[in-house]
Length: 393
Image (cartoon, rainbow, N blue to C red; front, side):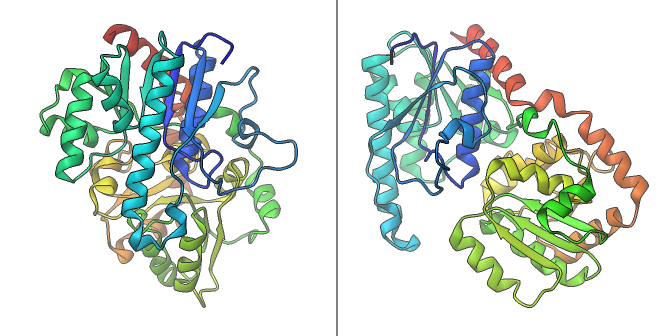
């Protein structure tokens, strides 16, 4: 690195990748730089899951147009998780995490002695804590359940200058582990307003995506892990045959599984992973968005801060979501969203049917939802975190 770095972000993420984690990491790095910090992003050197177009770099892929962009450095680590079946991936995953965490910590100690560090990796924070490295902050998106990992989390968190919790549920569980509540700030995920600045009309977006022009359209954008509730959404589509459902996102294996589940349903289209610049098209095309999270595990019920919620907010798309603490933090039933019981295809169908059948309600919810968007941009989040770090150091 030739330029002076004010802030180092550490994230065990493939870049580019099909996962929302990578989008969050890249967009936050760019937002910190726009907010005035000179940023270096350390990420995992792993085989990418998406291919860049000729002449395209990772920043352009994620829609980052600023010049100069943050410095980007791939950190060496073990990378053989994908060579084994999912049921056997625990050990190689832990080796990958540990090797990345150790090598990222070494990079910080050797080359970024004066910079603040915001790491998503407990292993990195733990090593830097043992070295008495000042100005280290830990961002947590979930609280592990295993005894040894929770012990490591407690030790590394107590050595940090502060902790960023992605949701109130994460903060509550950290406090229950014995961490100091005053050390923790809550900052939810967000969105990049540039990606939503020039949305097409609903009819134009549908034409671009080859979606039906006149039917009620339910849109889901995001990952397809089972706890996200997309299987439930397929069951719901069976009960709402007059509506059309389009599902965009997910890793290849999950897309294949869901297509098998939806086989024979004429009103469901599963488009698979989409580049970030196409996601706003789906939201612009829809009448209603949906966040059908399951009530288990804890990451769904308590910890998550779904990007799809903030992107629907940015697109002024009325949202039906399940009644869980993680979503109740963000949404207010009947005021800016429609909340239904979790794990219940019938209740989800009733909620979607309610909004699809009431244009005035959709308009009112969309207006109230979109009015909150400015506080949830990535740059607003970055500015709040930089000010918080200044107070905590």
